[in-house]
Length: 95
Image (cartoon, rainbow, N blue to C red):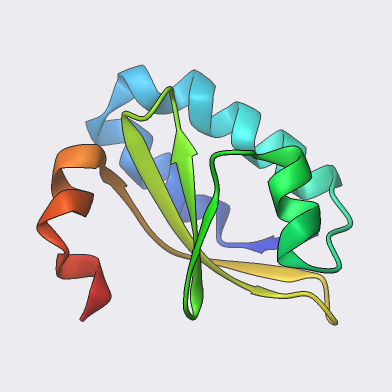
């Protein structure tokens, strides 16, 4: 899976250093993955949810959310946002 953009992870980790290990682990797994459907994503990350048109990943034991769009045919994952659980609950990412 080609991930656009790893920069979003670096920027988030600058502000939330405690998220670094969890996000780096997510990145390594996602980068090596060949997902053809959301079911494949669920096999790698059981806590992922599909909230059309996004896939929402729970990262770091429910502390963070990574919002992504995935083009399964092209094997490209676009990171649309990374936030704390509290920020995610406010729902601003949906707009």
